[in-house]
Length: 333
Ligand code: DAH
Image 1: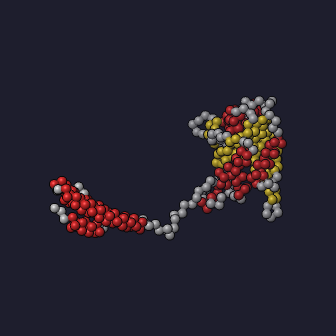
Image 2: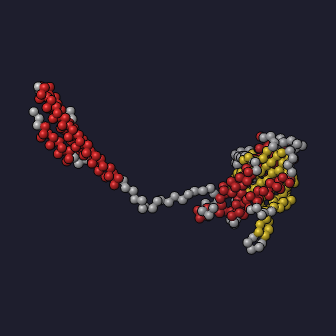
């Protein structure tokens, strides 16, 4: 019959000698598993008489208890050691400098476009957009620009090859024609977007540029409303102390038309006027072409050059800087 005292000594020695949790698990299987001496000793119990069986049973229990408590204690020690080893292995060096990822931000032109739109959205305007590849009908005809009108040549139109009557829009004004055609007054929209002209690149010209068009159509709109609106716009963007000045001008789609200047005071005591946009009362021919009842409704419109406003506001002297993607320039805004 198994000598339980000897077995217990061997088992506890093996538990104490286990070097890690796997090792300890093997010790458990060896001494208490299905094919262990302990299991064999238990099976042999059936052939004992009652007294012997009781004593043997107690001895087996004592062995199991001694083994379990030694096992649990060793298990805890080895788990702690394993955790400490893992933490040590996964230690992070917090003194390493992080990799620097410079934060991105909207381009200056996008920032200025959003500022402009925000001013008008604050006055109740909606934003409307139209296509950059536009039909000549919307870009010219519906805006009262006749085929032989000098404005058509002046605008240095870029035509789209392979299509009849498709141009890269020379201004955002066709969007007003689209809105008037599709919607009933009252209308108040601002229309931002890219515009194109076959201009040679220099400090003040780029073949790609951008505008924000504005259009208001309602029953009793006057030139005074236009002036008040543009004054509020100029003051939001350039400063509360600014004045505006309307100079008589000509655009085929407005009558009367004006070029609008904003006042400035230079630091050297110089002062004067800077042109910021074109505007006017929507020409009756345009209302008619777009299906608006000119006896009932009037409207005003304006067109703002985004590059020009950005350059005036931020002291940029060469339009090319807005398109060069030079990180040193872009980082300034
Ligand atoms: N479309 C004109 C241009 O690109 C700008 C403009 C002037 C728009 C007067 C208007 C306006 O709506 O009323 O030069």
